[in-house]
Length: 297
Image (cartoon, rainbow, N blue to C red; front, top):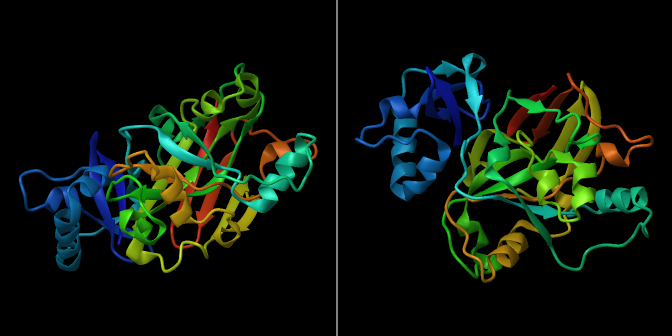
């Protein structure tokens, strides 16, 4: 099943795709049989297995479908209840390009998972504009990432139990002000500018993704292919990420974890190629659809 959140007359609505072609959906909020109807993916996750069972039943009986091209998309979880967790430097070729760009030994790889967060106020949806933040950053950059959405919380989750904690997967663009990131030393500010966390359009339930470690990732800027990777080249696997992150730290339903980006980022190009006003960034991850946003002034 593929879930999304969209805007209808100023109100968020929970949608469920008709099939894996992702061309039509049913408005679950509109036909939910109980008094409290979830209006976004986060609220569906909070409803637990019972809510998921209702969604599946409604999917099978639905007769009214909406063309996705008519939608105003929102992020699947429009207002996350806390920061988005992010894994830094998790693809070998991206680490090498970053090391070279910063004058370090190319084959210097992390021994442990590097973690940072993005503010929830950075989150925007598919089709929304990314602010350029001119005057604050001269090196706005993109990062195509597979993101995990947690379904069942917990602490000290073992690798063999990690899949039980997952609700599904989505696309995330870890937009970054590189110069702001370097200026402050700690990454939070440069990673948390308003509009710097496009997410969506869909959250694919984990049952729809046979192997999250075998997904092609592609990012284009104005149609030019910039990133072309595969989740098979992650250094740290999804179970290990969940295990290390949850060690002594409670994960909660609706938490979002970005898993890192492959090579091809703008700051590592020669010469560096920052995003500019009018740029259209599109990210496709196999089985998850396409996330597209335009850079605005």
